[in-house]
Length: 178
Image (tube, rainbow, N blue to C red; front, top):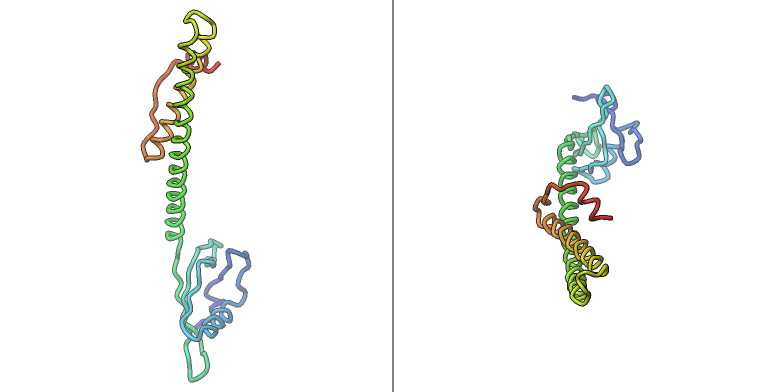
């Protein structure tokens, strides 16, 4: 109480990285500028004696003696948890946006797959079952059906569901992919 602010703490602007060399005059100037109570945003770190930087918000109010400002009352709030919660909220919003995008892509992809599967089925019906073309068309249908499964997983993700997992024989999967 009654000590020079520079002897009690160190402040650092995290946007510029510069330490506030004369915090008392800056705090008093900000209080005088407003003419009363002033709040600072989350652009400051309180630097501890061991160098740990703690994000803070501050509020200051001038102490007046007549028309003169004799000092200031400064209240600091640690906003570490608030920043962590804001970051988590941002992640959740990004994940929600990604889910919406995945749903839209899956929907459009399913529209293309539906027509592709229809044309492939018609083409398969137009060729002899024992011809090489029928076998190639069957592989194309199988590939489109696998693509539909992927699209279904995207839709489940977009609605907040877990993607389905299934076991398979690696050789069969590789053979189908080739």
